[in-house]
Length: 305
Image (cartoon, helix red, strand yellow):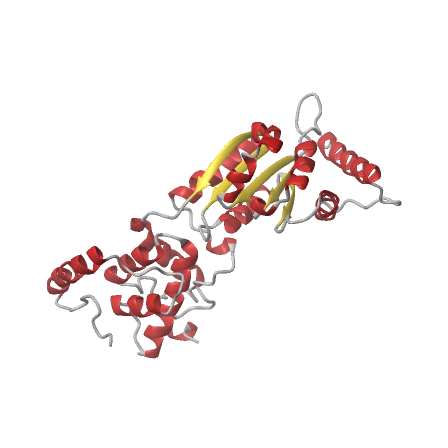
């Protein structure tokens, strides 16, 4: 593995969501700010829709991390379950003892009593539901009924729905329009801007570094630009490509990732679309100008067979 070669203590571009590597690019920070403001002001239902691989789960975990000292929090990563199972999962996450016999009425009363107790002690309860586009329609009504739990002053439970764009399509269904009306804040999380990709790469390397002497400017300008183009700014694809680039550079005993490494990594990644013809026509001229300015040659496809 390349960790020692680059002076790293762990893999910097793992696709496992890890809040230690959270990068607050403009879209992610805006979504996080909206969530924090809405929850702290007592809103009951909040929605975040994001494209595949754009960081919804790590955003959710970062939110829970920031709220852990001021709220009782629960996280449901897979809500593809019926209404009763969804409530049972919520009880488990909130450490509420399941009553015996576990009738629907008894379970709902146990949940309500626990929420009232938290409210009486000044604690807000926040529940984050990830992959919310997978919630069955029959279970969405259960979430709406949960939002009815309130005192005269405040909601007893606040729910954050995070999902792919299919979530918006589902919420537009006429039979669940009552839930849509209760969503007071809605955010969109998209890809990061291309100019932020070099900072993202350096941030991940810095977080994974063994010490302050580790070089974090491993990706040269041309490589970072290509990574942004191939990935479309999607963090998951950036991570996949960057990991392969480090492996390629390590295989050559090099400490720099160059454009040709990115091309090879992209060729080996089915989820990455080929560059459009206009980019291929433009890149050699642009890269050649940069190469002459630096006295090096990093033109399109250099060193590739």
